[in-house]
Image (cartoon, rainbow, N blue to C red; front, side):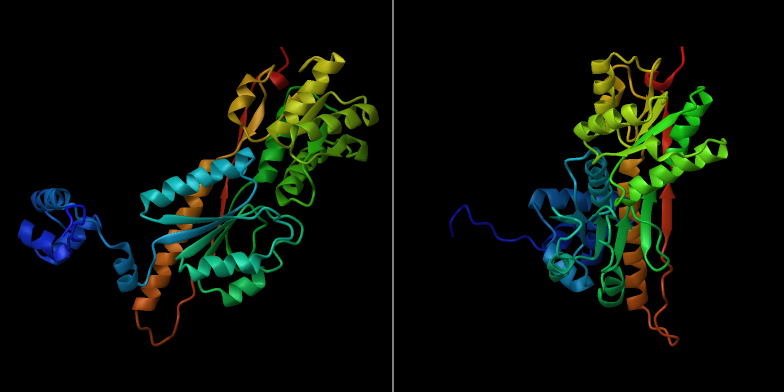
Length: 355
C-alpha cells in the first residue's frame, strides 16, 4: 500500500483504544452532557491521536437528516442582506448546520420552483427564505406550504397566519426617525423612500406618515420622492423634493445609501446639514458614523435577524423530528407558525441635532 493512502479510522477503533463503548464515543462527538469529564477528555485525546473524522453521510442516513440548511438570498451587494447572511452563518455553525446558498438575481420574476427543487433534492433539513417581499413574489407561498415537506422560515415580509416569519419592525423604525425630527423642532419633514413594491419601503413610509398625522401634520404628495436604495437615486429624489417642497426643513431617507446622496446634493447646493436641512437615515451602516456630518440613523438588528431565523428553523426541525419519531393515535400534531418581530433603535448623531 502506498504511504500516502491511509485507512479510514472507525468509531469502533476509537472506542477500543479509549476503552469505552461506541455509544460513549458518539456522545462525545455530539457534545452530549452525559459523559464524565475524565472520560470525555480521554476519548477526545484518542480521536485526535487517530485522526478520526465522523462520517457525515453515514450519520445523515442513520438519522434521516443532512444537518444542512438551504438559504435563498438576494441583494448581497446591499448592507442589510449581507449582514443578515452573516448572522445566519454564525448561528448555523454554532448549532452544527452546514449551509447551501442559492442566490436569486431577479427576485421579482425568477423561477422559484427551480430553486426549491434543487435545494430539496440535496435533502436540506429546512430552508431560510432571505429574499425581500417585492410585488407578487410571494404568490407561490400557498403552493409551497401545501407541497413542500421541509420547513421554511421567511425573512422580511408581511406577517402571514400560516407560515413562520422573522422580521424587523420597519414601521417602528419609520416612527422613531420621524418622532425624533419632530422633537428637534422640525415640522416640514420630507421622505426619500425606497421603491414601493418593497414591503420594507411601504412599512417605513407608514411609520413616517403615522407620526406626522398624529402630530396634526397633513400629508402632501409633494413631501414624498422614491429612489431605488442607491446613493444616486437618493440624490435625484432630494433634488425633486427641494423643487416641489421648498419649505422642507428635514428629511427621512429610508436607507443610509440614499441619505448619502441627499447629503451630497446639500453640500453641492450650499445647504447646511442640519441647520438648513436635517437628515435621518435607516440601517446604521458602519460608514454612516463617518459621513459629514455624522448621520443620525435607525439601527436594525440584522445579525440578530439571521441568528433568530436559524434558531426558529432549528426549533421547527427538532419538533418535526420528534413528531416523526413518536407514534400518536391522534395523528400528526401541527406546530404553530411563529411571527418573530425584532425592534430597531434610533442612533442620534449630528445630522439631525439642533445646536
